[in-house]
Image (cartoon, rainbow, N blue to C red; front, top):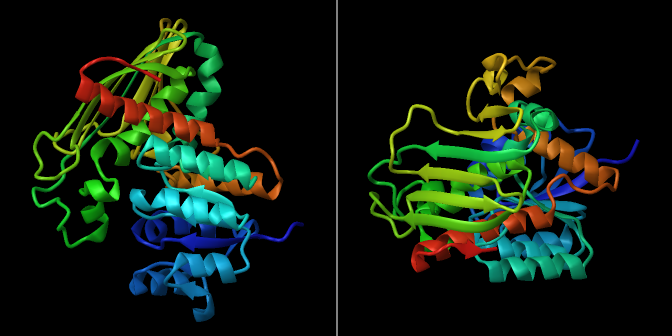
Length: 348
């Protein structure tokens, strides 16, 4: 059996502690956390203790970790504005790079990332976790049955509190409400709805029309995003997301095709995440069986994503989410912002 992948963590904040950690604990034969880096001492203490990382291998500067630690790969879970720099520096030392979404805050940064990972020939991927929920995996498997797609839509509506701003005492909230840190509704939450519905439509996006605006909250980034996408196969997709709209049916995407439709709910009961429509039976709940205990807990898909990614690294296979897919998702977001400003369709 191959030795576990030696993993270094760049960023040990809330998403690592609450979500990534559970995935790492389920993959002990595949991956071992051997070094961590974070500018917040409390984060390092929590994650370091959780994974028995010695003080010697805890770093306040991720560059020192890259220089001194014996690692094969890194995961990057920091505010969006740090992603490009940290990916590029990691690529330079020749380790595999797994970055939280989005890959960058601009297409210029994304181009620099693509160049760095190509020049240094390192595996690189971005976390598109909702594609690995049980509901989405089952939906993807059933796409051949429903045939040629013509329409998709997704939504992720919710409310942030009125004090949600860059001065919020919770650092995770503060940077998400800050333009300088790469925050905003479309890049932080609607990002998931974009790649989810585009995966179900099975065709890249060619044109983007959108309104991405700050509607309600006192923040310098968007709290509302409405997108209209035209795909290369002629299909049309609508995507709506907000931090300023109350919603009872939060987080879902669906696709409609010549032989039927599929609807996937995120952040719900895992067993009841998928519905299917056929003309013969109408809408029908698809029972998701064969789910072990970890699968029932994995409502965000992180465990499934990391399992697929680390297994691919261990076996030297192509990573499940390519750099090109992450680049395309960012290009859609960039085009949506341009479409808002220029009030016209933007071609990707």
